[in-house]
Length: 557
Image 1: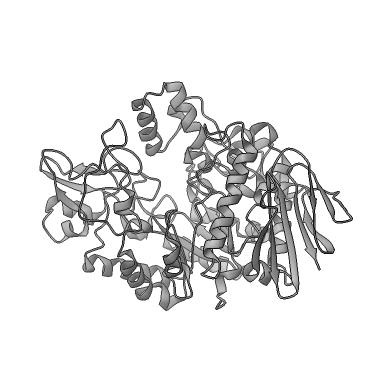
Image 2: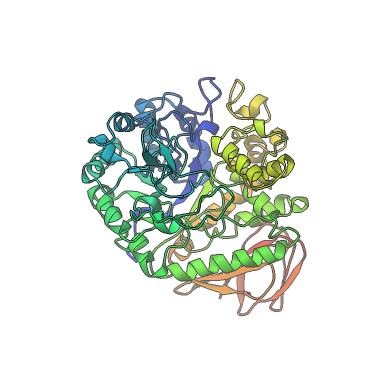
């Protein structure tokens, strides 16, 4: 595999609205990121991905861009971004932006002109179709619920929006539009950013046969993913994007590619000359220990997780590098998803953090993950902020849930859990802001915060630092990036174990992801314990006795 500068990435995703407010308006900003660069250096971070900071009406918290060329004033200005890039580079940190080019905001000037003249130049920038029999062009359901089509005023014309109605999809079949996007991307790269995380990129290509399908819900709509996710021909767009932009800057790119990408085309996405540097692995994102499917079956869920993680590594093997992560801005917190509530403590939190940390691929952490921030359960639906939360809540009610049941379902999986303000200290508003934040701080911030853990050598934060240090060490870095991956203990319930090997170096990683002890046999000779989240480990005569939720990393001969 040809080595690239980004292969040693220890990445950190920042949701800027909730990271650090410096101007007292209750919203995080770019200067707030700059202010914490030394903290990220202390952790061991070398790449930062910032969620959208472009000008936006914030109907979808920045993923509805109304001006690709400008920074939204709530975050600051371009000079603030330049300062962040410069200060980050001084510390050996690269900056990635979020690139949202499947759709724009409905307030984007292009779309406003399209509404004025749907058949004109700008109307061709979007996907606008005639309705059928007084209804939408077809019965596709939006990913966020409801119809994927919105009528244009009192006409029989509809525009496509795979997400909210405030996010009209762009028409990538239009070469003039594509070139305008490429020019915009290059201007940001010229500014000094090192690459992009690319949002919703699987949806650029649509199947324009617009087939109606049998409804799969009481709303009369249907999940049309086969017609707008990784559709045949999307590679033409992705290759053109790469060759007109990223390739000329040796940019790092992370594609948000939907689960289900065929194994035989994976190399086209992340191979030596792939469309992207890497892609996120979504195989774990639907698992939740408190869901109807897995409630009271935590070990069985871990075994399903193991199967999915190992299958994905086997698929990718030899084709490229994955981006391994467990938390992001669209998921509830990892400990809530993988650990029964009564079992959440330092040991389970630290074990979970290491589940895929040492698997092949690069690593990305999410703000608050390294201190164990948790979900903030709400008692009333009105306490949420995200428009899509209310869309989903109404959909649950339409499907027959009571208000109590619908709220419980929202509390289980809402993406808003990941968007509560960062918990820096035990002061007012958790040190995030000097005024009331845009979104409520989790009340547990007095017990869970950065300052408290930074001072404690036995904290979760300290353990993440140890994991990062081991992964980045001169002795083992290449092994963890390029070494062979071999699953072990596959039939052991609740155990996620694998070996990494490069030349004469062999490292064994074992996660006991359950609440009871486990006794395992280990072959070969153990040279030393590289890392454990317990201070005492029983290892004798080829037998390992693992504590509950123990993460153990061994070097063996």
